[in-house]
Image (cartoon, rainbow, N blue to C red):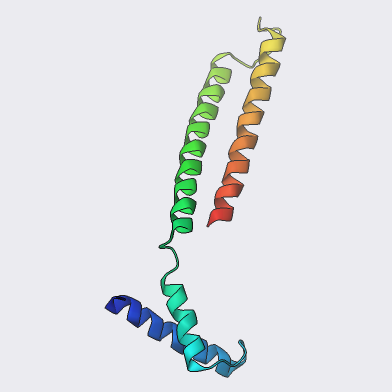
Length: 120
């Protein structure tokens, strides 16, 4: 049984659809069809797909946060190492590997951020 809030939302959306039709933004429909569309909107975000999207959002968020912590730690290690110069006595292969790993972590964080934007 729909709650008063759901009924209010349905009524408001039905009025909105009517106004859109009056302005010409939407094609004309009958009152029953408008009410059906409004009732479907009231149910959005309550199903299994919404829960799946929400859990994916949280997974991505935590993954991005962990990745950013890793990137920050890598940047601090790089700063502690000095200017990362070979002349400073650092192994060039280690420097190149660390920089490549840092770039990869940043790229993955960007990809996850784009996916996160796509969810919402």
